[in-house]
Structure formats: structure tokens, C-alpha cells
Image (cartoon, rainbow, N blue to C red; front, side, top):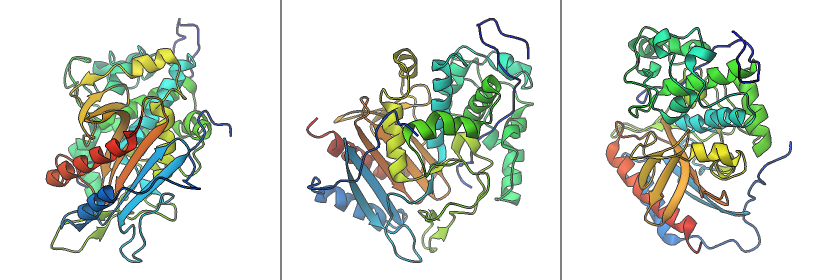
Amino acid sequence: MPTRTRGRRRPRAVLSAAAFTAAVLGATLLQPAQAADGHPPRHDPHLQRELDRLVAQADGPPGVIALLTRGDRTQVYTAGVGDITTGRPPRPDEHMRIASAAKAFSGAVALRLVDQGRLSLDDTIAELLPGQPAAWGAVTLRQLLAHTSGLPDYSAAPEFVAVLTADPRHVFDPRRLLDFVADKPLLFVPGSLYEYSNSDNIAVALMAEAATGRPYEDLLDELVYRPVGLHRTSLPLGYRLPRPYLHGYAVAPPAAPEDVSETFGASGAWASGGIVSTPRELGRFIRAYAGPALLSEQTRTAQLAFRPGDSSEPPGPGTNAAGLAIFQYTTRCGVLYGHTGNTAGYTQLMAATPDGTRSLTFSVNTQTSPRVKPALLARLRTVQEDFVCALLKDR
């Protein structure tokens, strides 16, 4: 790749990848919150009843776990089971697929590289990824992070779906996932519209690799896991989950719930949805990412330039707006920043106050989205907003 004129040399590009389809993805900058001890706040019986009703629905999740963290104290609410076979409840340190919440992690990598001067929000696909289609060349890192790039979604490509359908555990080369749409034009002029696309965060990770000459997985470790203090968060390629894990289920009454925790491999999701984490570590990450701990003020200002009405997938509580790999959730009780995700067996919300002192993670072990069980999603968002109000009480 030719030498750039911005005063930094960039190694040659290394290709990278993305997320599942909906039906079938050292020293710390922020001290991690500790489990509540001494005299923790009393559990709210209304919140507990809401979770109990959620899992009692015929098509509801077998289990749900919500963590409310205020400073160094965490309240854990659970209902139902994290494993139908054993009957054990969901637990804060069990592994789970975080689906598109992983997009916030690729955003954190890219934005930290922006802070270091190794990437610019104005860098383009043509400059950093010359092997990608010329028609995509003008797309910038900023547009990829904002989902305004117009890149076609590889996870909706018929060829990708066919491979996954034939072999759900197929091991994709994650750095070739964009090949499934390499013959497709942009869906719209970059920057003119918003459309959530799994391809965007694959391209983000590829740009990060091109700018540093290092694998995306190593960048996650250097720029996110170690600074934030994440020890149970990983990006696997296979279908196995680290033990113990929160089991994910396909729920379609009157059939019994089907355990789909390890039905699909993660290589087809990669930087767009392949990360595995725990409820506790999701909270730790989002407090750092939504708050001021990870990024400079200048980069954070760009990150938080929200577009009203653009939502994560699935939408989070309240009214949604889209920033750069982060979303604003404006509820009746206040504002949080965060991200959601859904894939087979799991639906996730992680959100934190703008100062990074309070967080909510809300995990259910079945999938819901505007296309998958929309009525359940509507109920879920209502419950999540009530938890937000509990989190922000007495601010």
C-alpha cells in the first residue's frame, strides 16, 4: 500500500469479517464494579415480578438475568433458568453469545486507534482496503461506524445463507465474509441514509488490521480487554462455548424449547457479532465505553453525534438514536448509551450512564427482534425501561 501523507505509515492490509442472520450472530482505565456487599440496596419486588411474568409467557425466554450497577455495588435480578436440564438459574459470570453488542467492541478498537493517530474517521475503504470493490471506495470509517455506509449486508446474501443452512457449524474465513457481496453495488450514497448492516463492522475490523498490521483479535486484547479488565470475554471461531455458559434456546410453543447454544459456529459473525462474554463483564465494558474512560474528549464528541430515530438491532428501551458504534436510549427517566444484540438463543442489552458510573445489562436466553417475536420484544423493551428507571433513581 502506498505511504500516506498524514505522517504515519500503515502496514499492508489484512482481510477481516462479520455476523449471523436473524433467524438462524493489566492496568484498568476504569475500576470494575464489585458485587454488592455489606448492606446492598433492597431488591425491588415490582422488577422481580416483571421478570417472573416475562419468563412465564408461552413464547418467553426460559431465563433472564439483569445486573444493575451503581458505583461499586451490583444488584443481580434473575428469573427462570439458565439451563433447563439442570434447572440452575442464570448467573452473572456465565458465558453467553453477545451477538451485535460485539459491534461496540469493534467500535472501541477503531476509536482507540483514532485516538492514537493510527486511524482517521475520514479514512476510506479505497485507501485502506484496496482489495475491496472499487464501487465501495469512498466509504469512510465514520460512515461504517454510523451504519450510513450503504454496504450490502453479507449475512443476508443467498450464498452465505445457503452455506450456513447446509452446515450451521461451517468455519468461514472471517476475513473473506465481504466476498459474499463483493459483486453488489452500494445500496445508497454513503452518508445519505441509515441502514444497519453486519458488513459495516467487518469492514471496520479490516481497517483496524490494515492500519496496524495486527490481527483484530490481538487488537481487542490490547485496546479493550486488558485496559477494561475483561478476563472472560473472547472472540472464538468455533461453535463451542466456554464453560459454564448461559444456555440459549429456540422457543416455539407448543414444542419444547430447543437448546441452540452451540448449534452455530461464530466464524460467520466475527467482528460484527461473534464475541462471547458474561453479564458482569458486559457491564464492565459498557461503563468504560459509554463513559469517558476509554476515549479522548475529541473522539468521544464525534462518537456521540447521534442521529435521532436510528436504532440498534433490536431497538433498545425508549427512543433510540445512533452514534458511532453506540446508541442513545432516551427513556422517561433519563438517558443511557449502549448497544443491543440478538442471535439464535440470545437477546442482549448493555447500557450505561454518560458518566460511566451506572450500568444495566439485560440478557434473555431466547432470540427476539422486530422480525422474530415482535410482541415479545415490545414487552421486553417495556421491562427494560422500568429497569432503567430503577437504575437512575435518586441520581
